[in-house]
Image (cartoon, rainbow, N blue to C red):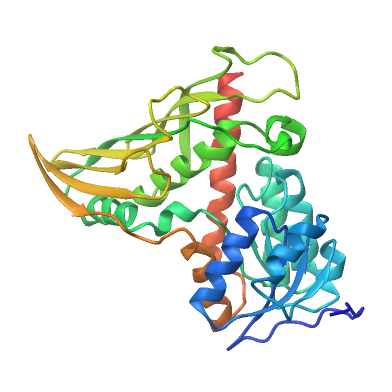
Length: 344
């Protein structure tokens, strides 16, 4: 279907079937599109990617969508929302352009390479009064929800420590991930962002202090090369309530399995944990600990991978205005900046 130039009209307050455009059609972009289509009640208005093969693969899911190579082509279709799955260096600028044009935005993480870029996107979303969210997908896994509920309910007493881990035995396969100018950082901003978000979300915490941080590349402290990124990171944070958060993440670690992903909470009245099962990136269990005893709360299967995007689409249908909860994205970016600064 050919693209027709047109100005972007403001989105209505309620959108029973929002028209969504997808920018970036690699594996993640197509997976998110498939999940939104499966959840229902959206129309795929347009698709764009500089790779014609990626566009063609996406057309198998949405054969009636308009196609193009870039964001301009999508905006010509006057979509209600845009899903962005492009390299990190493009996220902030593309999100701002989409918001300024009147489209809601669902962007892959990180929203910006640092807090400055992230705050600029938030300003654009507030000014345009448009919905903005980032694909912090682990929030939507039943196991992590169960642990968060344990923490927030007070069932564990005062939670004084969290321990979070994300080791990926493979690492990313796109070269831009390993160029700081394009990615903003290495495994910390790629994987650690999920750990920090899960900790703050579970605790309901605001700003945290970074007490210690270490980043490594090939087992050595990161060099002064401004373009180099880390493949191993450790950090210790503390909340205003005194809860200590420890996190560790890596790429290409010889972990004995595909991935080691987990979160443990230690409270004055008990503990809880989430762990991936059998090295899986997708299968998680959750447990409540009573001393030396453990009670299973959640076991696989749980098809959680596309729920963040589906939740954004549902919220867009109900009204596409700015959601103040997006302000937490700036706190998340500031925390990442503080860890990098402390490690340096």
